[in-house]
Length: 231
Image (cartoon, rainbow, N blue to C red; front, side, top):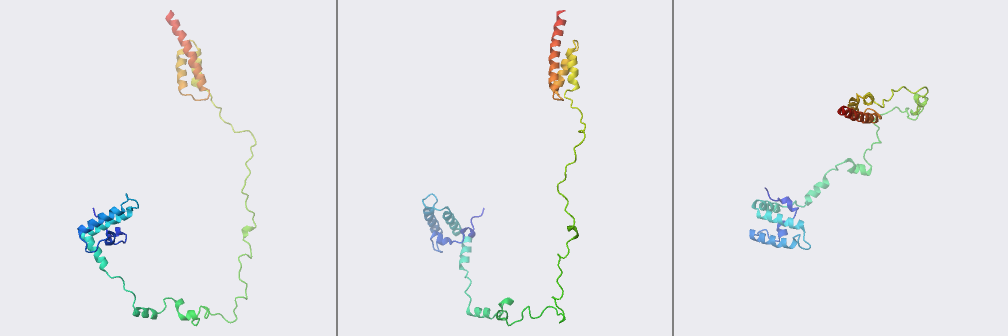
């Protein structure tokens, strides 16, 4: 895992952050780091976490011989020298970069775009002899036609309504169960069919008919059992 780099200093001088000279030893760097961190620690009033981070980065950079050598080498590089008088004279003698910077354009002495036309016409030709064509002389042919109406009337609703199949509110199974429940000796079968129809109703009145069939079938079956047992 690599430590912090020179870019983590955000352009600050590590020697200035720790308050040590460029010839400071490792012991001096560690002692200065401990002292500065105690002053700007975030737990202290007025402390700064950012300054504490910069102090840690400065210590790590100066304690690493390779990164310290890189930083010292970057400090030793001379900055760009100011332009000399010879460079200023050469820049003044250079021609203008664009046409608009020349003296002819500024003073109006040079050629302009209105002196010579790109083509020549006979002296008798004139653009004012004939009127310019206009796109509005004649309207388009589709203007004479009125636009189609956007609203369309609904179709007439005359005549009888369309035939719809009748709604079977009661299924055949419920009816058979009710008939069997009413019959004396078929009451057990009506009870069974009524329970089956009650579990899968197919119409709005199917459940009610199935309940009636189950009730009648249960009562008749009960009396049938009592009659058979009493013999």
